[in-house]
Image 1 (cartoon, rainbow, N blue to C red):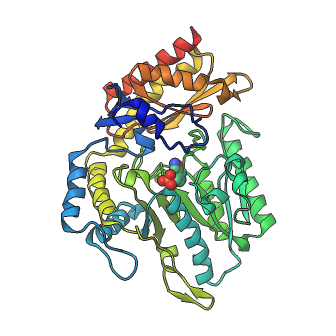
Image 2: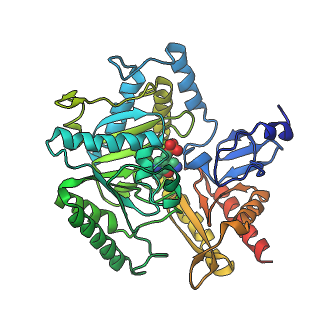
Image 3: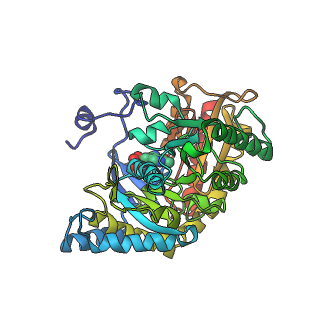
Amino acid sequence: LKDQNTLHQFHPMTHPLISREHRPQIIVDSDGCYVTDIDGNRMVDGLGGLWNVNVGHNRAEVKAAIVKQMDRISYYSSFAGTATAPSIELSARVCQMGATEEVDKVMFSANGSDAVETALKLARQYWKLVGEPMRTKFISLKQGYHGVHFGGLSVNGTPYYRTVYEPLLPGCFQIDTPWTYRNPYSEDPAELTNAVITQLERTIYHEGAGTIAAFIAEPIQGAGGVIVPPADFWPRLRAVCDQHGILLIADEVVTGFGRSGSMFGSRGWGVKPDIMCLAKGITSGYVPLGATTLNKRVASAWYDGFTPEGVIMHGYTSTGHPLACAAALAVLDIVEGEDLPGNAARMGERLMAGLKPLAETCSVVGEVRGKGLMIGLDFVSDKKTRTPIDPGTGIVERIAGYAREKGAIVRPAGSVIILSPPLVIGEAEIDVIIDALTYGCARYDA
Ligand code: PMP
């Protein structure tokens, strides 16, 4: 199975947006911010795996930590009355890193979708345990992405992802996302926040505050196309949640651990959520791991065990997997030791500055936006109306392909090209990405 053709015959394609005929690039090697495909092309990893390889590929420290743990014990449950040392150490570490957010307890799982499912269940559990069992509903944002499980799908902000799997959880509502580039209200950030907050208040009023368990959103929307809200949105959101007692869940699966230029995306907005969903960057993708953090308020109702209706039980076989936790501890040493949030902020500025001119020079780039090392190029068929380009035209794929020829892997996602390189990236690699996309856009226009 060494050559491309044989490998492609066995390729189990499961992504709905990629046709069976599409031949994915097979990645076989890696070092730092670079990956090499089966044909020997070495490219800058503009995706950081899938928004997750924050510390870069093939780090000796992370590999050593996993092997060291394997030499002791590879698996034992941290869920059913036993625990392993790395899972306890990692809980303490995540609480310490989230101390500013008042993180008090951590529940581990295997990926981001689990972390969201755990958060939604914990929110409901909280309200049962504090004697407000009517609070079962969830509010979220349009364009939001919260993984693939039924709970996460129910709060997903794109009907297109949800419809086939309906009926989903009842009592889930999506309000408009505050987005200056494409929204029905205003390009003025302050007016936009006011409009969306008003919509939120109306939804709360209409449904009854006493029926709403939580509001869930990404501090910066990722999969929806890298949508950065106005700076006052999250503080206003926090205030409305506080006013009505609603729990605030930050889905930090992408933004957690430095990607947007601060350790957590919500911290970047000056907000402390009640619950955070973490995954991806926690292990930098070396092994799968999800984590859901609870602040003191929610943790106080954690795991009391029994209610008149039944036992409270939530956990996975892989909860606190020792290899994943050992990897995470090594990864977090790097994240803090090398100040990766700081580097993400600095390199993000360089990347934005280098790409921004494309919105002027390229006929199909409508906007370049982002925060830290989460950046999106929005492709439009008409710059005035800002109509997203039809992905069916293949234009976005084509430009991404040209960029690959110039040494950078970038991710075409619908009408947006997403960039999320490793947070250890340096100026030279940032410039490769800028040059590759500039070349790709110029070649399209030529
Ligand atoms: N939440 C967000 C914000 C995500 O971006 C993702 C994945 N991209 C998920 C949840 C789901 O994570 P996973 O794919 O690890 O299940």
